[in-house]
Image 1 (spheres, rainbow, N blue to C red):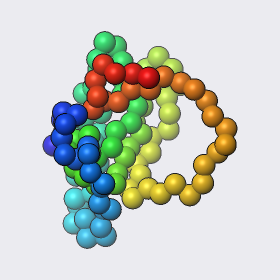
Image 2 (cartoon, helix red, strand yellow):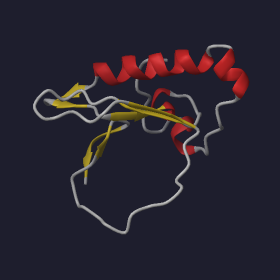
Image 3 (cartoon, rainbow, N blue to C red):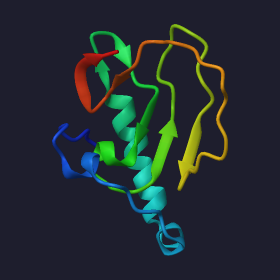
Amino acid sequence: MSKLVAQNHPALHTICDDVTTEEIENGFAEKLIKHMHDAIKTYNVEGFTAVAIAAPQIGVAKRVFIIDDQSTDRDSLPSIVAINPKILRSSKKTHVVGEGCLSVPELYG
């Protein structure tokens, strides 16, 4: 479960389920987050390191993502674990930057 899944994996193409209270209490969520940390630390393609990963990227269709910036050549982003995140509001300000996805290698925009 600590490896990135291929871009055709079903977990990447489905609406994810919430993490339940039971899954937090029984340790499932903690194990999932550990696997996500393990997976993000192994990513290094052509000198690029990972910044964030979501549970579907390791094959688990749950609403969890982490930010764990692996870069060493710039100021790192703060580490964050988000379980069942919801967008409450958004800014009207925009900023255009390059973006890639660990699950869709070699495609950047």
